[in-house]
Image 1 (cartoon, rainbow, N blue to C red):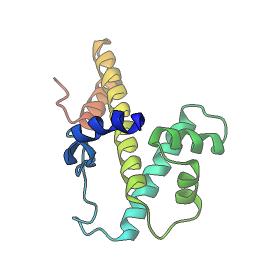
Image 2: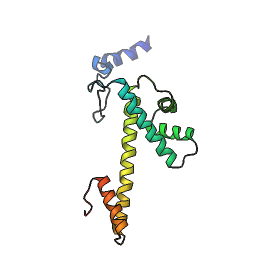
Image 3: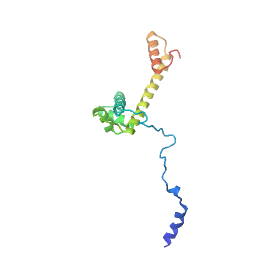
Length: 153
């Protein structure tokens, strides 16, 4: 009996809003995307995801990861997907790709591209500091074109 008396005041203090789950489970700063808004065909989604997976695996191989399997695991870790998802995209094309896998591969690929561009920008700055030669000038012009800036800048 005393047990019920202790619980009773606590139950009376709770309101319906205290027990209600949030109707909006997303954070305010979370990026939302409606994949159906663009009416993209599933084949196009699979093709894009495959290209992103291939690029991530090639990047992992280029960075010196031993073996294709380890490169797939590294790419999967970067994209926060399972290695099986990468393997399936590379070797056994699925009919469709889940939205979370698609968006995670997209984000990892974007991060990969930004990393490469940052390294090219660093090399561009270092090259501009060297004494001018015709070959250096051509390389500086090519790098400036890749980065989308003027060669003289």
